[in-house]
Length: 479
Ligand SMILES: Cc1ncc(COP(=O)(O)O)c(C=O)c1O
Image (cartoon, helix red, strand yellow):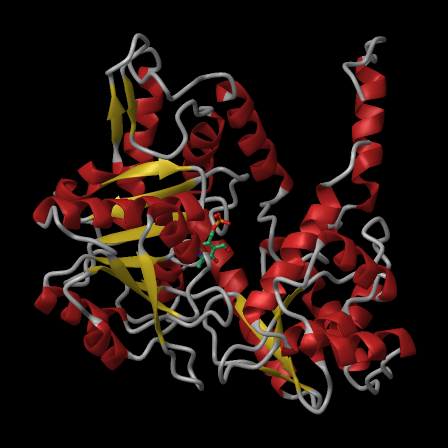
């Protein structure tokens, strides 16, 4: 496909763009859990308008766009106030949770290197329930992530394990408040004590839920100390593009002082172009997400977000109570935040997810890990709230149905899979496996229940290789 020789009209372009959307998940109906966090129509319109106003501005040069500096400082200040920042606290606006975490890891690594220039193979301690962005950061930045086990009942990191895993190469302790999978809040205060006693930086990943935590606490929910005010916590990340109801590209990473933060910034003037000073991974950066964030924070304000938190808290409690009374499903752990994992009880949850999908519900399958069971994830957002009653009625009905038998084609695959090795998996044989499993990437009707059961039994490394090659199939080939 080359550049179109005949330009399309405005009408035709939007006709085609809307046609592309037909097969996408219908987030606006409230049947999709997670991925999109959209407020009511007025708030959504405001976010879009503010975004558009600043869409073309470029944060690369703050001298030319002082308004972006002004807005970023105000947004960071609001975030610091929300998350226990002190007078010396500071931070940066980033494009998302992954970038925020990545920058916290880079800061800690470079801070440690300054103190110890000979440091080789730096390590960080990461609970097994932490978001994969920590492992991605480790991979990109040449840091080894050392797994910290979690309590199988609560899903919270085991404090003592931090103490026993610290070495003279440990540059960062990490924990989540809350974790994505089952919405558990790690014991931040206790880990903070260890961080302090060993003088090691400690990052709290609050990307998905930290924005909600102070609001939920104000409503009477039991939220343990988790933020920058906790002794030992040196940095925290929080996404606005989740529960602050802002479109994608909006997060912050905050530090309790500038000494760590300074290590985040990359500076280069040793060339024949402009002096490059990048506090974040992105260099050229649209002002759109920042303006959208500034606008939504001021539009909803404390009363708007408090009312949102109240609705989310009662929706979460409603889901937990009803699911606990259903015989064939159960809630994993005991989340206070609107992140609820549902497991099967004498039923395979992945088949329940397929049947819910037939009724229009989109949820994320999650594999088992250690003692934590396989589940489906509900990231409850305001759009879901009016539909929660219907969702629960559907779940009650479909979870009563027996699991479907394994189709013959898949039983051959099931017998084969345990003998596969990562090296033996090639693009061609993954294509063949997909054909056997009748996975048609162009068809939203594909049922993934049996496939997820099989994947759940595989070694993560083999699963990762399968996913890699599957994605290649999705994007490969010219149109
Ligand atoms: C706890 C946690 N940390 C980090 C991230 C990564 O955020 P993003 O997808 O914005 O990069 C997520 C995403 O869901 C998350 O739940």
